[in-house]
Length: 555
Image 1: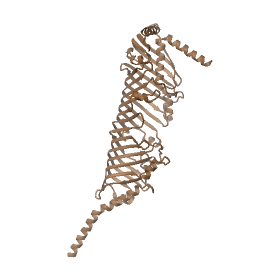
Image 2 (image 1 turned 135 degrees about the vertical axis):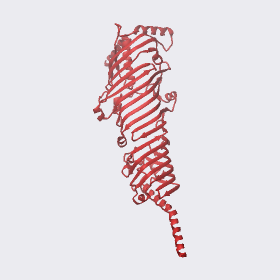
Image 3 (image 1 turned 120 degrees about the horizontal axis):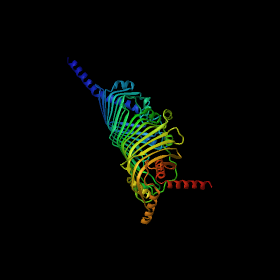
Image 4 (image 1 turned 180 degrees about the vertical axis):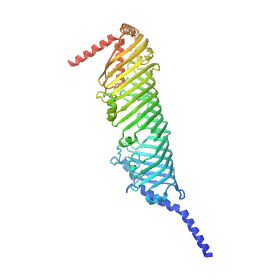
């Protein structure tokens, strides 16, 4: 009887030892299996560690504390070596990893990972990359983490909570991309040795992610930032709020930094929404196909110092050619801009003063924005519709149609300006042209023209009344100014209405300045119609001067 009791006590003791040490041996086995998975080759790129390991065999739960993944010294040396093809490495520290419903036995027997719930708490992930090296589609950072022993993993629910993600350029030794307060939710995910080689390394049912702070420092003059970013795979919608392009220099210091004229800008955008991105095309081929791009409440400020010399001649392309010369396919069905404002200031070379033009309450839609030949075969026109108010007052509409198949950027413009007091434009005219409108009312302006890469031609119906102007001289000699103003008011038609027998329909005819973009081209076209209407004598003189210059060049 006594021997039986002793045997029972020994069995209980052995059982307790087995129970309390089983976790230790399983932990040791798990560490060994993980080590096999993470050893990519004989000279491993990564090492990992964790400070605390809690295991429950009953419900298959595992908790790891203070997990770290870091590149080996050999890996870092390879990244820094310009002749090595390793371009990206990952460095990570994680406060806690918690797994529930982990089929441990199946993992130890087959290497297959099956987990019901997987949560990663407060990870900080840094992508280290060498900007000298070009990426390849055949190798990703995650593919370099796992060895050939990795087979597959299935997750019912996966959560990354309160993460921080940094992209660090080792050449400049600075973070160029930062995501803070990042949350990532993934449902019914599958990853295996085939999918892991892709840029998007898993199949899934749905993905949702968000980040509260986004910073991109990709340029020496500007920083890009966003307040909140969110994405839903089911809705295929990405949105960013409080998007900003912030200059690193004041506009005066920016101008002083460069020898030639260069445009300074600042942008604040309330909401940016992207719908129906073709991620497969983007990931596999690097091409952008988007259903709709919405921009709401954009405020754009533009400044240029015209006292600086113009940069050396370089041809600027019109929209169609610029699209065709893009190195990747860009295709956006609809671009919708709402409730936006643009302020343009220029420091005048004539007066050293600032001119100002504002475009307010700007709404615009662009349809068929593409350089994809397949899309162009279906619809060869890109159309643009714009409505706004100039200087907060003058109602303006514009419709443009661009032939995407033309070799010479053929396009068509129709625009209108509604009834407004012409003196509102003095903030622009006075500093730039030394012209001041003393009085005058624009009744209506309606213009249409056809243009290509060389020139434009069309007509303008410009109705106005009681125009009087002053022309100033830089020497500010009152007598001379008075004579100039008198001459100008003698030459121009003070009124032009369709009811009048002397009504003049303006002719639009202008050559394109090849080192300017489309907006100066549009402005030159409008100016030609205004001059023809208001000062037909001056228009004839300009034609004669142009013809004389051509004859001189011929001779």
